[in-house]
Length: 105
Image 1: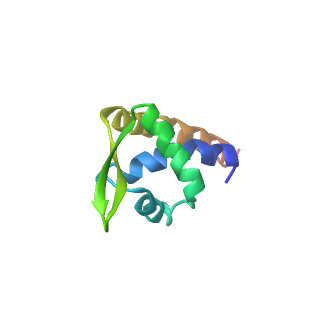
Image 2: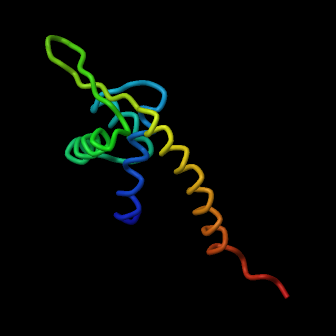
């Protein structure tokens, strides 16, 4: 996949990974693995950017004597996912145009 396209999809994929339940970094990576490979060094800057943009919030929970950061999607993050769904329909329309068969005469 083209690096620019993948980069644009990563934020959306991270939001989608926490859409239904709050999660932490390692679990987000595991949840995304069947669809897209992402490393910790890629994930954590995305999480910080999404937090700064108010798309998600962060809270800590003690786990095995350590604090674990959990990420929660906010209304702005849910709205971004909805917008992406609409945008994706347009992308699929363009894809259909590009891959259409030549009209038989």
